[in-house]
Length: 217
Ligand code: DX5
Ligand code: ZN
Image (tube, rainbow, N blue to C red; front, top):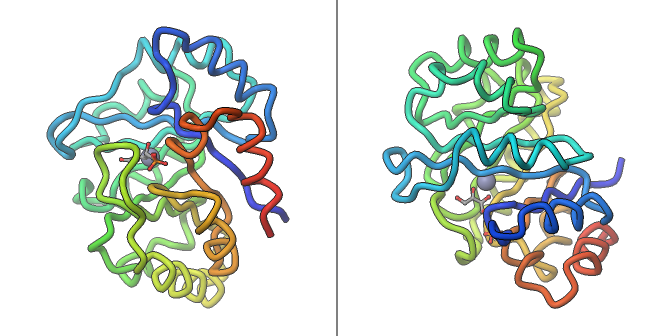
C-alpha cells in the first residue's frame, strides 16, 4: 500500500480555515493531522474543541488528532464527539498507557501512541500489538517549522522490525520537519504516514506539493 499524507492544520491560516480545509479535501492528502497542545506537556498552546469541530464540519477525510496534553484520559470521549477518527496520546503523558489505548478503541477510534525524539522505540514492544499507529516525533513537539532530527531514520528502521516481529498492524507516522528531500528516505525506512505542516502550507502551490509528497517512492 502506498504511504499516506497528513497535512498538519497547525500551519493553516485560521482566519481562512474553511478555505484551507477545502484545499486538503481537493488534494491527494489522505488525512487531516490536528495538533492539540495544552501549554503544559509542550511549551505552546494551539486550539481546542470549537476549532476541531469547525474543521470537522468541512473535512471529507479522516481526522488524525495528535494530543500533546497531560492526562489525556479526561478528554477521550470529548475528542470522539469533536470528530476524531484516529486519536494519538503521548507515551510520556500516560501512566497507564495500555488502559488509555483500550479506552480509545472502546470509543470506536483508532488508537495511536506518540513518542518524543528521546524515547526509545523499545518501550513500545509490549503495546505495539494493541495499537493502530505510532506517531514518531522527528522534532521536539510544540511547534511547526522545526528542523528534522536525523536519528529518526534509525528509529524508524528499529520500529519497523518490532512491528514485523510482533505481527502488529500499526502504521508508522513521522511528524515534524518532513519535506520533499527526506520523505523518500523515510518511506524506505518503513514510514507509512507522513505529516507535513510547513512543507505544505509554506508552499506556493500546496495541492501540487501534496501530490509531490504522495508520488515519492
Ligand atoms: C509539532 C506537531 C507537528 C507539526 C508539524 O509539535 O506535532 O504535527 O505541526 O509541522 P512541520 O511539518 O512544519 O514540522
Ligand atoms: Zn503532530
